[in-house]
Image (cartoon, rainbow, N blue to C red; front, side):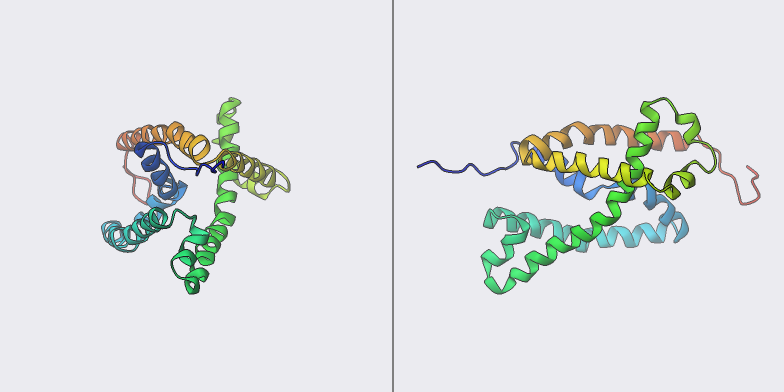
Length: 198
């Protein structure tokens, strides 16, 4: 009798990079510095770290423990432990589904700028009003959002090992290099106050 092989990660580093990729999104690079500066700097960081170490760490370890214990996906794991907890699995599915409506739009923006830089049009992208013109156009944001969704669907369709893990191993080291590069570049910038004086 042929047994169906379960899909899973082939290495610990693949799992770690995939987990980090799911936790570190564009919001951490794009929106986080803006919110930190707007909402008090150090105080905002303290509250953020407390929430990460309490709610964030607890939810992450709970998800990992449930997956290892039940060998089920998030939709079925709670119900396999206790049938009346089945609604929690549906809730864990609905939350990412709602978040995806936001991230697919942002992903479309990122895809647009990747295309712009690959075609050598970065000078135009740096001009005032370029972004506003793009997001207010009728077709372009939808086209790039669908392109981002298609790439995402393809990665997921390839499975855990050949899709998610392989993709994470390719892009996460690049993300680390990019973050270090942005941090070093920001140290070379001159600070100006509201009046524009150094």
